Length: 412
Ligand SMILES: Cc1cc2nc3c(=O)[nH]c(=O)nc-3n(C[C@H](O)[C@H](O)[C@H](O)COP(=O)(O)OP(=O)(O)OC[C@H]3O[C@@H](n4cnc5c(N)ncnc54)[C@H](O)[C@@H]3O)c2cc1C
Image (cartoon, rainbow, N blue to C red):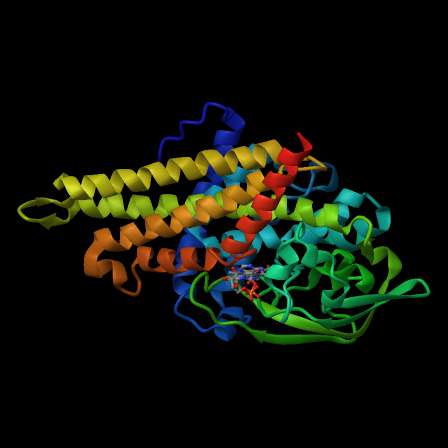
């Protein structure tokens, strides 16, 4: 493992990092490599390595990273989340994303602290050592992808453009209708979803709400598993609701609170993406460094050629900058009701673009070997490409980040 030059890390945090690193090396990376060539339905099949790997991850408690210790979870703080996600990402972006997302519905329920939510959504999740309770975060819709991320744009409050999944109050229940897109991570295997939906169409996309939905309820229609370019061990799939009825207390927030909670969600998911793809960049850098130290060309090792050295150091700079920015985003925003979301957005954009550039350089430095199936950097390159769109396309996140920066300067 590389030497970490961050002197904020305590001995206990260093121990956590080493433990997660060993798990990522021994369990996640080999499983992701084995699953990568399979089609999405085979990956999701009950006898697949997906399930043995998720079971091992749950048995290690990794699914509870976002859940406070008061609710039985690992209760990681900002630095610990960054360290754990970097290491999980180093082993496998696919599993890192899956493990971060699975705890999301339970973490929202834990935040509200209501006994009934705890009993339905938190207690069974933290007690699960067998990956029987899988969570997901469903916001993207067939006709509204980027739209959901432009919260400070006038279009967000345009009543003609509200979200496609709607919730209508009926007595002490909410009735859900409409479809979420096939891009929901864990969506094809999830048992429970945190669904970001529309409760007040007159407010447009801002008139949202967040509901926790068990996906075995009558009227839930599951879509097929999605096949894609990278992160192929990360299951994705959509679902639709046909008059699905949930008790009113499963609706965690309505239109009043929705914009603030969406902002908090982006601060968390953007920072998580920054840390995970810092780990991906580190993995690609290490593979390239090792290769250039043994491969002979022109009568000497590749790493002895000056142009190769320049490329390696450029990769090193990107990895270290990613690490610094993503940790700062996590540490600054941890536990804040009003996070500096643009800092997390900067981390998501910078770290995923740095990871893509570092993976591209790693492929280049491995030459033909870097393009070969079964080679780690070939997979990392595809994983990093997906990250430029994942959890908000970088172009659109940059627009949203710019609007936040400008609004804060106007407040000063
Ligand atoms: C690996 C992966 C994991 C994901 N996981 C989840 C998940 O767990 N849950 C979930 O709900 N979703 C998830 N998504 C979906 C993801 O959030 C969306 O793909 C993303 O928000 C983009 O939406 P879209 O694909 O509909 O593209 P579109 O919104 O149609 O965008 C297409 C292109 O147009 C550009 N564009 C769009 N609007 C504008 C604008 N106003 N100005 C300028 N350019 C614009 C975009 O930058 C993009 O390049 C995931 C996606 C990926 C790839």
